[in-house]
Figure 1 (cartoon, rainbow over the protein chains, first blue to last red):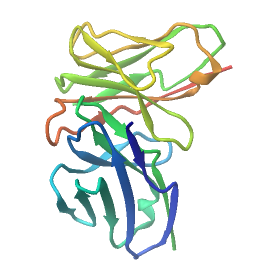
Figure 2 (cartoon, rainbow over the protein chains, first blue to last red):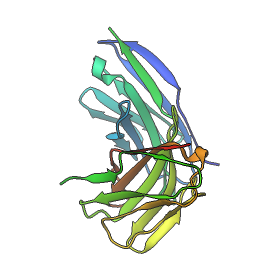
Figure 3 (spheres, rainbow over the protein chains, first blue to last red):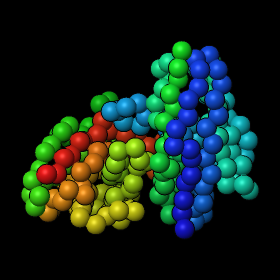
Length: 109
Length: 114
């Protein structure tokens, strides 16, 4: 079957670093996305990985290991505005984006 | 560009009523998608379209219908509303499903079925 697993919620302190993990099982694999979603708003694109390794984009980095079916999103120098839900999504061979349930991140002062 | 727009923003329906959720994109994207998001949950794909005249089922299509007569519009139809369809509905679009084809989401429609 197809499945995306990520922790339901995490808490971190302002200025710290947090890593949000995601494991996936899909029929075929055509890339992995991370989206950020603030409460009551639409998801917005953060990162995309299709090859193994780390993609860095400012304070946010995303890592992929295709052999392990594993990805993580790394957020550095956390700010209060980073409190949001982070959605991991994997494209399967049929071109459908399958999402996990999302990780609710709370950043505390 | 306005991006992806959805109407209405919020709607209350009675059980058995029908309605159409509208979605329009002005980015000339071929691919369009409808998702539903239940509280505290991720996004579930309802239907998607790879171009005008072509639609296909996603993970949770039962109780919904779609059409794609133009590149810009992708309406979602609920024929007999049920309380289980209470959710937030997001429409999204992308150029395609090749590498780095980001999906752009609309602001969502909040639907309450009583």
